[in-house]
Amino acid sequence: LKKTFTSDVFTMPEGSEVELMAWIYTRRLHGGVVFLTIRDSKGLLQVAFKKGVSDPDSMRLGSEIETESSVKLRGVVKKDERAPGGSEIHCSFMEPIGRSIGEFPIRKGASVRFQLDHRHLHLRSPRVAAFMKAKSAFVQGVRNCLGEKGFYEIQCPTLVTAAVEGGATLFPVDYFGRTAYLTQSVQLYQEAAIFGLERVYSLQPSFRAEKSRTPRHLTEFTHLEAEVAFADLDDIMSLQEELVSLAAREVDRRCQAELRFLRKRIDTEAVEPPYPRITYTEALEIMRRRGMELDWGDDLGADEETVLSKEFEKPFFVTSYPREAKGTFYHMCDPKDPRVLRCADLLAPGGYGEIIGGGQRIHDYNQLVESIESWGLNPEDYEWYLDLRRYGSVPHSGFGLGIERTVRWLLGLRHIRDASLFPRTPTRIYP
Ligand code: NSS
Image (cartoon, rainbow, N blue to C red; front, side, top):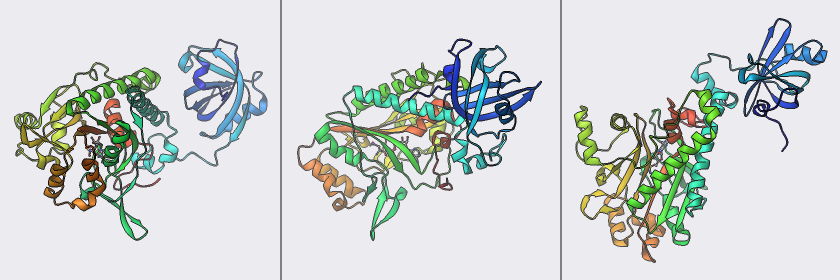
């Protein structure tokens, strides 16, 4: 691929000849000179058209072309301190590739709702592109980290027959007359996969039919899940620390230009391990001091997590949730205190709340049957899952990290939907 990007121009010496393909971002006339700002995936660049330099047809096109039209242009690099980035192009020739039919619908000052209704067009904005590049760098960081640790990336089914995270948030799908569901988590399939591969991860969408209209809930989100054989809770907590800090630093390393453009900073010190660890009981005490009275056994909802996570500067683990607070059938009870689970959530500081949920799984057959029954579930629905405990079961642990939630925290985004290319919420499934 030989395309020259706008960003390449800034490192070229004056007088270099370039050919660029890009979109028209803005257009203005100033003292007989036409100035266009062009946009491509790497950023913005100023292009000037002058009599004597530009061919007359190109200059006319420059003075009338609609914003967001695509063009091909040739010109010469000029260093100019007044130009954003210190370089501009003096254009000799420009031709349209795809001229816009009428005015681009999204104007400056458009409402958030209008922008979301036109997300397919709005994602051209350098701001949205910067969010997506940061997300891409984060995902790349995750893949690098897990790849180096000998994990295999696997692909699990999206169409499933049973709940992992409680029946209340399942999306039913008509499956040739039977009811299937969209997956909430690929955890159970990963638990099967570790018997052949030992360390696995997946990056797939998960679905939650939650009518929660909060800045941290999507109905479809990108789920990074990992499962490890012969690993206990402490092992995967260390892995999570390393993973989050490495992937966050990857965003910092690769996205300096985007972060500058967004006026954001990755707090690389705050993501450095180790992360504080508190128990659920200690979390209740902290909240009580902040005026939030919770009974032991109550779940920590979004409001509670917001209050709690404002007390921390780094990501922190909350461990040892009571069984009734988590409502999961697969978590192992703590042998030292069977009222609580060997589980840990990782919460992002500053009010952002949970980004990872994970823990050690019950690997004993009888304990698992008992746990499934205790939640009023039918062991027959989990027959294949129980097989994993029948044949050569081993201690194992895993976790799930919400990519959009984590990117929201890292970039300090007001709403999780800004971290999604085409966000899905209870009221939005278009475009
Ligand atoms: O429900 S979780 O806490 N845990 C699981 O699904 C486990 N079965 C994962 C595992 O152990 N393999 O979800 C994990 C993470 C959670 O911390 C969030 O970061 C994210 O998934 N998550 C969400 N992100 C956005 N929107 C919604 N609705 C959502 N639900 C969970």
